Image 1 (cartoon, rainbow, N blue to C red):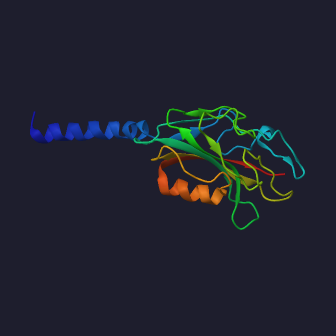
Image 2 (spheres, one colour):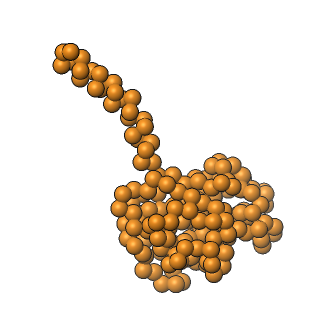
Image 3 (cartoon, rainbow, N blue to C red):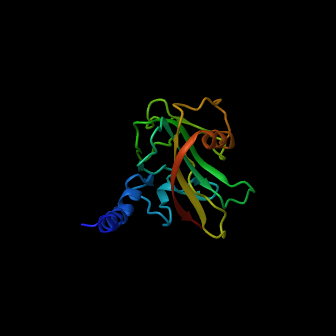
Length: 187
């Protein structure tokens, strides 16, 4: 076999493997109860402000985190809230690196279903814990961006009353990668 034929076959083989190799290390986030792009179920709707949902954080699972991940954080953000700065619905950080899922209801006040060491930050509802969707009546459906952040530090040292914006700053400063999906809700 001539050198150029061997090189061509190697190049074709590499091209055939390229999609598999690119996909093998993909960092992904999903929820068994929420399809990406779908409408949030009533379980993830707030109970208050005229909304009548269960206000329960969904089950989440992730895989393919970047090498060197030492902890995770999870955020839920509504960029469409009529505030000028969006709305933080859930902020949880210091999730140990060996955890790759959170059960439904992990965002309950007190965090009893969170892994040991995880901390729920203050949301725009003014409390720690998951706060469900509740956009103003008549608005175009809002987007709710669920994100898991892979961090290069074991923990974020933040005051207990740190704002979601402060947590977000620390996430961006320490992030190795992130994975997201978006769901919608309107009323």
